[in-house]
Image 1 (cartoon, rainbow, N blue to C red):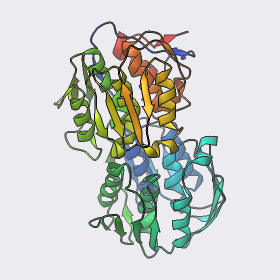
Image 2: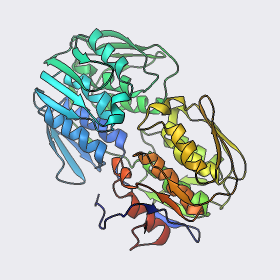
Image 3: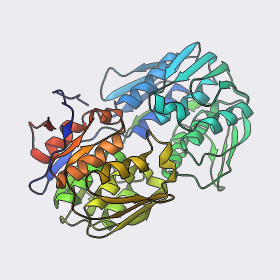
Image 4: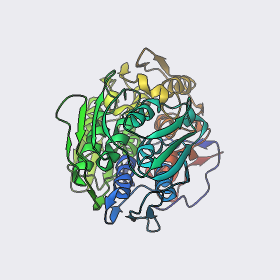
Length: 436
C-alpha cells in the first residue's frame, strides 16, 4: 500500500461533501487477520506467506517483535510478506506501542523463547488490561516479572508446560486469543476456561479458532467459554488477507451520510471477519448493502435512521456508528460497550467530549451511549491519538463544515493512507484533504 504522497498539515479539516459520494475504495488487509497470521507463521514448520497484508504501525510492531525474538520476517514487498521460523530466543526488547495485539499475543510466544523478553509501550498501554493473561501464563508454567502494568519480562526456557488455566478475559478477548495462538506449542497443549462477564468481540475469537484450524491445530470450542487445544506442530501456509472490515466502516458510512454509493473492492463473499454484522447495522441505519463481483456496495438515501443495538461483539465500530447517529433522523442507543474504556483511550468518554464539542446531544450511560440528533457545528475534535475517533470525526465532517481533527496522523495505526483515501473519495483524485 503506498504511503502518503504529500504531508498532512495539522489540524486537518475533514472534507465536507457537497454532493452524493460515488467512489470505489481499495483498502489494505485486515489488521486482525494480519496479526494472527504473523504469530501463527512464527510458530509453524516451514515458510508462511501473507498476501495483501496490512502495513501499519500495529502490524509493523508485531513483525518487529517477532524479529526481535529471532523469526525471519520479510516485509520488503508491500503485497507479499514472508516468514521463516527460527528458534525463538532472548534477550529481546519488544515495543508494543499502543497495539493491544502485540501486548497480548506476544507474551505467550515469548514463553516459548530461550531467554528473557521484555515488553514496554506507550503510556496508554501501561494501563491496559493484561494481568489476567499474565496470571494464566504463570499457571501454565511460564515465569513472568510483572507489576501493575508494563514493563513486563517473560523469562523463557524454550518451552511452556501448558495444561489447564482459567482466565477472566472480559476486559479483552485478545488475552484469550493470545493463549490460543501459542497453545499448540505448549508441551501439554491447553485447556482454558473463561470465568467472568460475557466476552466482548466474539467474532475475533472465532477468527482465532478458524485460523488455528487452517494452520493444522486441533482445537475444540464446542463448549461455552471453554477451549481445548491439542499439542502439535502448526504448518506454514499461504494466507490471503481479507480487506479490513473495520477500516471499511467509515467509507461505507459516507454512502449513508451523503446519499451516495461506495464500493469496497475485493470484498470476499464469505470470509472470517464479521462482515454480516456490519452490513446488518448499516441496513438498520438506512443503507442498502450488497456483495457483488466488484466488491461490497453500500447505497444510501441521504437519510440516516437512528439505531438501537448491542455492539459488544463489534465494539470497534462504535465510534463510526456514533458519528452516524449524530446526523440521524431519530435517537440512538448503542450499548454493550463498557469495555471501551480500556482501549487506546477511554473511547466512550472521548466520544462524548468530542461530539458534544460539535454540538451533538450525546450522553454516556453504564455501558454505552445515548444520542439525540440536533443541529451540529464545526469545531476542533480531539482524536486523543485514537484512529477510530479520527474516523468518527471525518464521518461527521461529511455533513458539517469546519470539523477540524487536531491529529489525523493517528490513523497510521491501522490505515496510513486514510487522509488521502478519504479526500479522494469525497473530492476526487488529486485531493489530499483539507488543511489549515
